Amino acid sequence: MTDDALLAAAQVSKAWPFEEARKLVKRYPQGKPGPDGQIVPVLFETGYGPSGLPHIGTFQEVLRTTLVRRAYEVLTGGAPTRLVAFSDDMDGLRKVPDNIPNQGLLTAYLGHPLSRIPDPFGKYESFAHHNNAMLREFLDRFGFDYEFVASSDMYNSGQFDDALRGVLRNFPAIMDIMLPTLREERRQTYSPVLPVSPKTHQVLQVPLEVVDAEAGLVRFEDHGEMVESCIFGGQAKLQWKVDWAMRWVALGVDYEMCGKDLTDSVRESGRITRALGATPPEALIYELFLDEEGQKISKSKGNGLTIDQWLTYGSEESLGLFLYREPKSAKSLHTGIIPKNVDEYWQFREKLTSQPIEQQLGNPVWHLLRANGYHGGDGERLPVTFSLLLNLVGVLGAGATRAQVWSYLGNYVAAADPAAHPALDGLVDRALAYNRDLVAPTLVRRKPAANEALALAALDEELAATSDDATAEDLQTMVYEIGKDPHFGFESLRDWFKALYETLLGSPQGPRMGSFIALYGIANTRKLIASALD
Image (cartoon, rainbow, N blue to C red):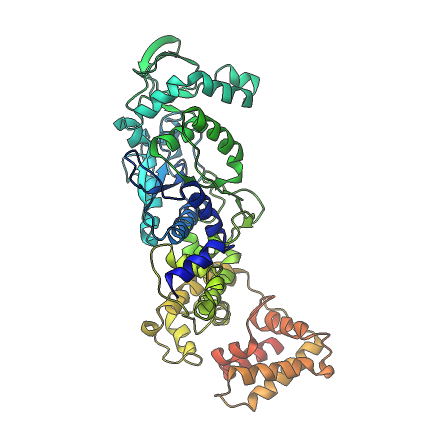
């Protein structure tokens, strides 16, 4: 594949990262010009509110934005880019999250900036530093190329001071944008600028008057006393929508995506950005993740999966596939979807090298392999699917060990050595955890109906006469033929396979039975059948 062929395919690709990246190519057809006329990096930003522990919804913005960044680099032949992961840790703590220890400690700091509140976990200098560290740890682990920027550092160091001057200079215009969007009661106390009280150190939501925009001086009431204070150097922060716009202007942000719940914020922050004399970034508004009950996932409620929970039961690659897919469609996020994403990732990966370039650019794995600069791995495959591995572990029971699983894998996989199959070895651990925590506690194998029992007995008889070295395909054909025999009364093969899954594996769905029998062994499968018929 030549660079010209890749560029030609990318220019017309319907894969969503390329569709997003073409917005930036249209904005900067000759590259992004800097103050001196030289080309400067296009700036991608992701935002994070560290009021709760990071969850997958937080991480997905960095991954998806990186996918757009890499697509832009392909379209421009390697034009310079930067990715900033921005933590809004100057926000005041509005409520104590449900899923953290030492809640009483945080209660005493309600209203204080997150970066100035003690860490309830006792590990870092503040609550924000703890949550920021958790996010960065995983981003580093996944190999992202990003720059971490904390709002508190930008405010406290004075790096936002010039942009804050712009807000004070355009105070009336910003008020004209924001006030019509607020209820009457809120209008009475609204201010784009939130001063930090010199008395209580809380972030105040009070009306204020601009005294001197250039000097940053404002006047406001602080617990019954009128005070005049400078907002520079971390002595104030901005209201959310104004803060977002100020950040876009100060950093020169060109692209940022966000959830559907921030649609109004995108519109109003964009208007404020224009009032400040700049152009809003290009944006993708994505749908939100839902929990098993169909409710929006919340950091403070902790009702979604954490990154660590997903990685206990599934691979990093499977998480990437889930996050890649259909960003504009709402998706449920729970442990039940993990096995499917593990297997489909490897299906996409195996197909990659046999596809023409146009189809490769529509293959999620093409994008995921390049998210952190890795271009290898095309065409690799797993010798055993994760779903089949789960079924094997399921029949071995909650007490199964790695050694046991690998001994059975020797029936099916050439050179069944963990060192020779590192990806499969990682999934063995995850299959054991998935079965132990999520399957074994509720596993029930139903008794077969009369016709099902006759079919199982026939399968057992066939297996008894079958050589141990029979192939998975031969075994699958055997199972098919029994299901098609009208003597056993199955309306369809689906009914026969469902009976096998429910009576032998305790699941409504399952693997190709020929593959399972080859992996588990004929003798062990006959024991399963005997147990079902007992």
